[in-house]
Structures are given as structure tokens and as C-alpha cells.
Image 1 (tube, helix red, strand yellow):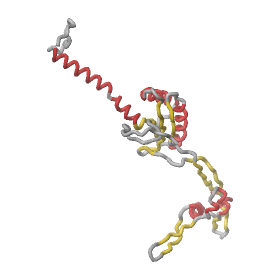
Image 2 (cartoon, rainbow, N blue to C red; image 1 turned 90 degrees about the horizontal axis):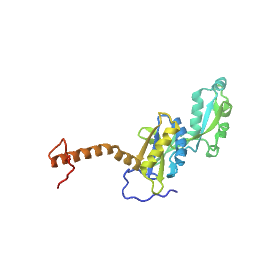
Image 3 (cartoon, rainbow, N blue to C red; image 1 turned 30 degrees about the horizontal axis):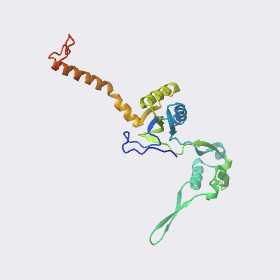
Image 4 (tube, rainbow, N blue to C red; image 1 turned 45 degrees about the vertical axis):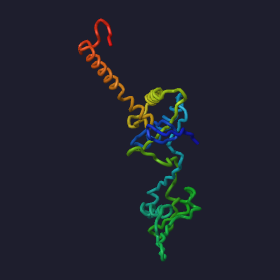
Length: 245
């Protein structure tokens, strides 16, 4: 459980488990899965950041079924037959429709849920060959269980991972941004991995982006006002240093 202060106005307008967000985006999902945990661990080491957390969820399991095509060919089985058997067992293949006076119900074919708990269910599934023999899938397939994301977050059109964080009391957001950028440069991430600040942090950076222009405009306005007061745009301030009201 993560506690957040209730704010009537959120400048960034983005909800998350912390006040500030740092987002990683990439067209390559594998690169994002590899680099996001590295950046996350590096940000946790920054002493001025607290409540660092990530929305990446890679704790799921995925079972990949690898078909031995040579063995299947010797047994007279095609890839389409194996695919149809797997879809009928674990997919949602409708085989009939039951009609009543007020409604209709689709009958879906699947393996008994008791045998859907793991890859060992493949040994209980048989595929009919062209010769009429029932061939167990376990004789021509092997399964591989790997880690897989439970959900893939997106920002715009690309997969993304958002790392949220808060600041220690008395720490300026500008110092946190500089520390994160320094860690980012030292990590050696590829150019295909794009990083941006979001929410309140993005609003802060947007406000600072025009600071130089604002200061320059303020100096120009002061120069013009002094020139009008002392009736000289060449030397708006009297050379003698005397000021009069």
C-alpha cells in the first residue's frame, strides 16, 4: 500500500503511486524489459529519492510449445493439425449453439479445467494422424516455461515503463532531475530507449524551458523603461550615476 497526499490541484494532471514520474519508452519490448529494472535499481540508490516504484509487471509465466516438425512429418501430422488441436484444447472454439425461447448459448470446446494447470496437460491431448492413429502431443512437442509480462503498458503508440518517486523533505525537484539525468548518462542505455519526465516533473521542466527568454525579455523591458525615463536609448542610465525621481 502506498499513501499519497490528497491534492486539490495536480499541476501535471497524471495519477500514479507517487508525485513524480520518469517514463522509459522503446519500440523494442525486449530492450525495455531489460533496461527498465536496471534504471529502477539505479534510481533507488539516489539518496534524495524515496518511495521509488515501477509499474512494470514481469512476474508472469508463459509456456511456449515447441513442435518437432521432423517427428510430426514422420507421423503424418501437419502443423495445421497440431495448431487446431491446441486451439480446441486451450482456446475458445465454438462447436454448437443452444437456442431457448428467450436466449441462445454458445457451446465452447476446451480441455477439462483440471488438466489446464501446467504443460503436463500436453501428454493427455491426442492428434489424429492421416493413418487414423491417435498421437499424443507430448511425443512431438516440448514446452518451455519462461517469465513474461502480465501487462504491457503503453504511452502513445510504444511500450513504456513508468518509475514513480517522491522527494525527501527539503529537496528541490531540480536537484532530483539533475541526479536522475546523471544516473541515466552513466547507465549506458541504448539510443532506442527514450526517457521523459511526466506529470508534475514534466510541468516543472516545461516551466523552466522558457526561463532564459523571460529573463532576456525582462532585461529588454527594463532597458526601454530606463531609456524613456532618461530620454536616451544609448545611455539610459546617467553617466554621472545620479538618479532622480
